Length: 129
Image (cartoon, rainbow, N blue to C red; front, top):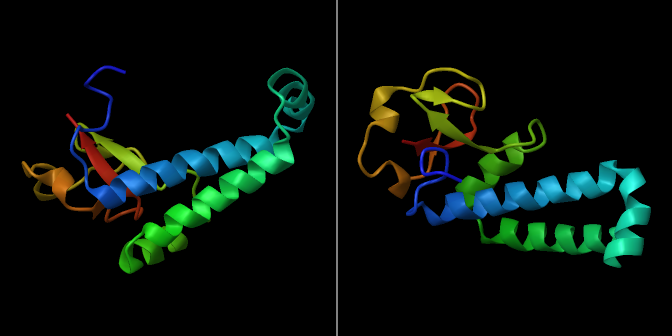
């Protein structure tokens, strides 16, 4: 990943948790939806897909418990409707809904020290410079 498309080095700890959750949920969906991959995973990687899903779900639950109550409430509200709850803002545009974000929201030097969300779609955001 080059620096123009990667998340910033210092990011709000809750945003980091949300990104981990997003990745684990994505892995879970892949295991759940790609039934044709199960024989390959079992044969070549010696992975039981059902067990892997259980482990992923346990880790997701563990990480959800570590979210602050307000963050968790928003996460639980938006996660059923979308695959990605954390999206980048590139050139002032939210990549969750493709609407411009207010300059005051993304122009701050310490933008990643606070947890921010898109006013339009509710996704948690991070700014890519």
